Amino acid sequence: MKYFSLNVASHIANVCEAQNITYNNTKIQKLLYCCYGCSLAMYNKRLCDEYPRAWQFGPVFPRVFSYIKKGHNILTVCQKLDAPMDILALIDEVINTFGRHSATALSTWTHKEGSPWDIVVNAMNDPNGIIPDDLIAEYFIANV
Image 1 (cartoon, rainbow, N blue to C red):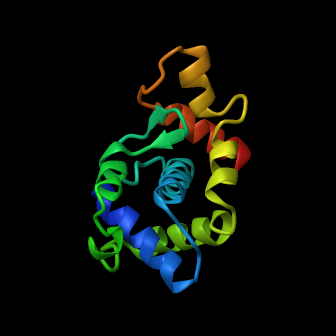
Image 2 (tube, one colour):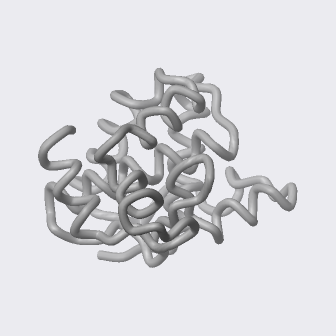
């Protein structure tokens, strides 16, 4: 079920646009992380081909971050993700749940003590390291 991370991020941005939800690179990162985590928790499957990394401001998908940071329009990568309805519904539900929060609030949430980001950065002492899927799945099952 792994989709290209840029396509998933683009779909998220398009859903945000359609629902008048403001977003920036940080918010796209956090919404993508939430979609990724919910997919692991619900289906035990990765949503995209890229692993989130434990960067300073929370989980980041480097390819997506770089694409947006370079000034490319994430909206134009793909208009609608070619995915089954259950995956599209999952993404919609995540955006409905988390999209109303600011990028700062979502970043703060990802930094909570005991979060996968916190474990990688502080317990494992691996800033910029890959956040393991098992940590993400366990956290989303227990907290989301």
